[in-house]
Image (tube, rainbow, N blue to C red; front, side, top):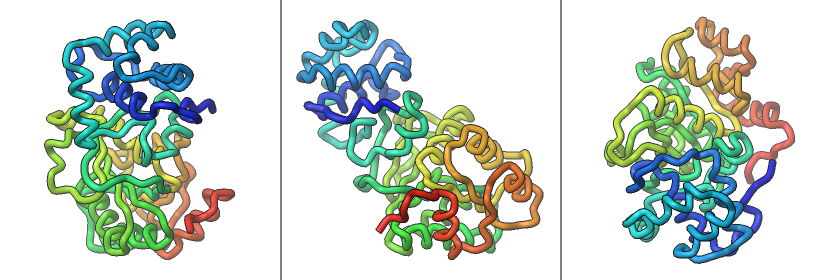
Length: 294
């Protein structure tokens, strides 16, 4: 797949333009189609320019709506302030999950709100599952997080209670990095540790659509995603896992169990994971040619 980020002369300009055009909650009067962001980035790669010249460059490339939007009063000042405060991450930024570009292509999010620890380029293991869980499941998810960190992976999860929180706790216990993707704005994320990313505007509340978008991003960021607990044909975990399998967002593993949902996910193509210490072997099997991080 073509990547518009092979050579970018003025990376900061590209980052700020992507944020200005696509960050939800930015002071724009129009909502622009996100599918055009690779063309925007490619234009700025081919015609390096300052931020003040970006509108003209986009206009000459035929991106008229994007060029007009950049001229809205106060928009660039808003984005410059956010950039100085380090409050967003774009598809042209260091630390942007590399698998999003590989797996999602032009559907990858061009700009997200950012908070917390600096995000370094790293491979991720996703840990997902139900909110209401037993101690056994909590320990399993936590131990998977710890094992992922031991293997050199970051853990990506959805910031929810239950399996998400357990996996994050395990990763931190082993000194690992954590990325939490939220289906709400940063207003609701004050107490969450690690790196926080969300496509939602700062004060945006939970919606089912945002949750589905968040779930897809978790799977697409993961070299392997582990489902610690799911309910058969019920809830976001089941919907997200089956959609990840259907769309081939990443290899999927599920805690080995006689529960109907877990057996069904195995039937759909997920691999059973009997114990957290089997994560490394499963990664070698599922990811195949990809080598474990050193």
